[in-house]
Image 1 (cartoon, rainbow, N blue to C red):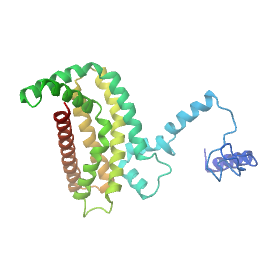
Image 2: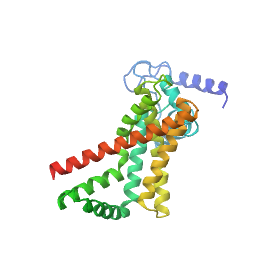
Image 3: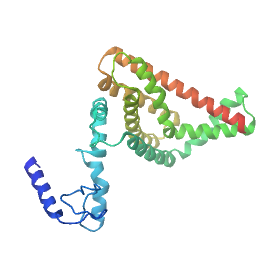
Image 4: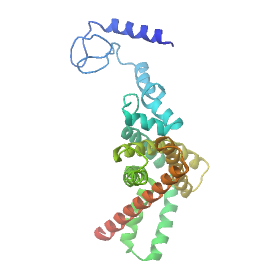
Amino acid sequence: MDSDQIEAGSENQDKQNHGASCQNCGRQLVGEFCHHCGQQHIAERLSIKLLVKWVTKPVLNLDRGLGLTVYELFVDPGGMARRYIAGQRKKYTNPFVYLFLWTAIALMANSLFFSDVRADVRNSLKEAYQNLQIFSAVQLEAYVDAAIRLDTYSAQVLILLSIPLAFFLKLTFRKKTSYNLAEIFVFNIFIIGQVKLIDIFLILVISFFQLSFNSYLYSTFTLMTVGFIYGGIGFFGRSFWGVLRIVTALIVGYLLYSLVMLTILITFVLLFY
């Protein structure tokens, strides 16, 4: 569809809506969207066809919204994050919405396909911590339950990983980039959201081939590393030292995140069980 056809279609839509009232605030319309409240005017009644359109259009539309965000985060994640930070935000999905969407779907896939492996993970954790003799029997059960929940549903706290990671990225690139901590944090959220999207398909593949849960954890960490390097090259610039800085920040940030989570988990179990 060329620009003339698009413009003609827009003009026809405006003519159809002219004189109608907004269904939300009651103001008279002068175009497709209400100038007062911003709601789009849809004259037709709700139907299955309309519902299908509402569901599929944001996903399949490569000109704006979720479809465009997914596409650009695959082909140019660093450049897309730069454009979002520079102010081109209307056509992209909010980074936090993007992360929470794929996290929720990944959690559901995790619950459906990894239920059989949790018993093996539980037994492995019990054996490891029984030898350390840190916990009583009750504390060990509580710790294993919490650890499995964190390992299996780590996406729920992935946003916490972005905090130390953003800090160390800012620290390592402090003389090489003009982006502030909040802007680097947004870049991190986009990358982690894209990793969670790929993670959904990874869960299906590992479940289909009946691979171990450790394979899933290692694959997720590898995806995270590759995603940050790939995105970081476009975001911070292409150079050997830039890649080294990204890898260093990722390792240090992940270790700090793991140490903090482990400390909180052990302290909570020892104090309350």
